[in-house]
Length: 391
Image (cartoon, rainbow, N blue to C red):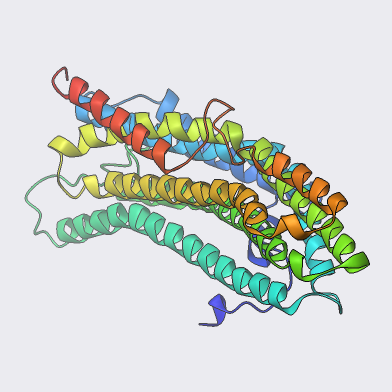
């Protein structure tokens, strides 16, 4: 497919940057105003009605409504945090461009070029696949209730319906005094207005996921380049050896800087992710437990999307931490004892910096990794076991 073809293999994150520009997170104040208006639209069309226009009377529907609201707030908080820190993301992009420009110069190592080109292709394909996956899930989330409601309308219009029509909303909510469950004209207005809000929410969810996937993957590539160059260091001598060592130290510093910028961008979003995961998982499972019907499809979609994203992110961050620590192993494994004394001293400085665990934390409380994902899932299940007997 043409969509998955990487037309600019030597550029830094072309798809992610295009997404940010298209939806107002790059390109100046006018585009940023566009982003602010879309966020405001989602708040007015989804958040405000759910919070201020009343909750259902039935406990199961209250649980569903709260889980949907938590998920929506989860999306908005993360995108606002990223928007607030977008200058740090631009700083990270500038570092990556500096590395790429030097690497793809006439004197660049062909092995390193191949690593970056292959990585860029994989990152681009995965980020596009993730974006389509999110849009597909949201289409299922949004269209399933609409299709069901249209079928109800057609059946009742033909005179075959035996009961009064009750249309299915995309989320459990009221909508500014309209009779969205009993009047099809009101329902169409609701779908047109709220549907656009759900679309923007899906895009924001996907953008944060794509940015994190691309940013973490690029940091992993930088650490990998450091390791490859360290493995070849003993093959050099004289001024060539010392020049290569300076480049390695600079590259390792760039990799650490990119990771630290990602940490500043995302650490608050990560604690939101963990807290929301616990609350949303519990509430969604409580609802689905007693409501395995068509109306549970939307809740299951949100559950799958959130779980999949959290797992993929924790898995990727585990790899990032592993690559950063692998730099130390690469120095130890290379024949450093045969290198000049000044080079050995410089390598000891690199080891000192590489021994510190790098990654993204949840508000600096703990590192995000697969182990943490397992603990969060276990905690969620434990709370669910307690609550299911009380509700």
